[in-house]
Length: 62
Image 1 (cartoon, rainbow, N blue to C red):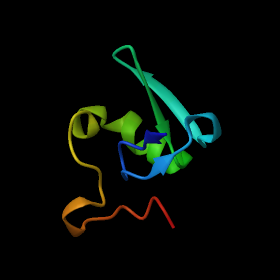
Image 2 (image 1 turned 180 degrees about the vertical axis):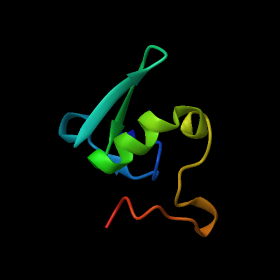
Image 3 (image 1 turned 90 degrees about the vertical axis):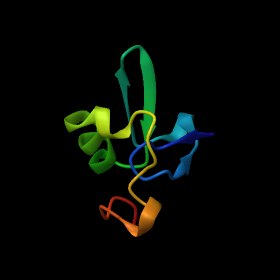
Image 4 (image 1 turned 90 degrees about the horizontal axis):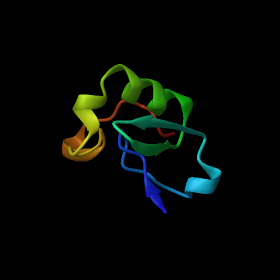
């Protein structure tokens, strides 16, 4: 299992809706929306809690 770094959703890496590489690491995403959020601001998500922590949500996971 992999964790979407934007929303912290657990996903099967083989079935991920999207993926991208950043600084030599492959990240997997539940949706294109989460991938786009990460791509625009990767420094916000690498090594930090996802958007669902602290009661915040970007609406990335229905």
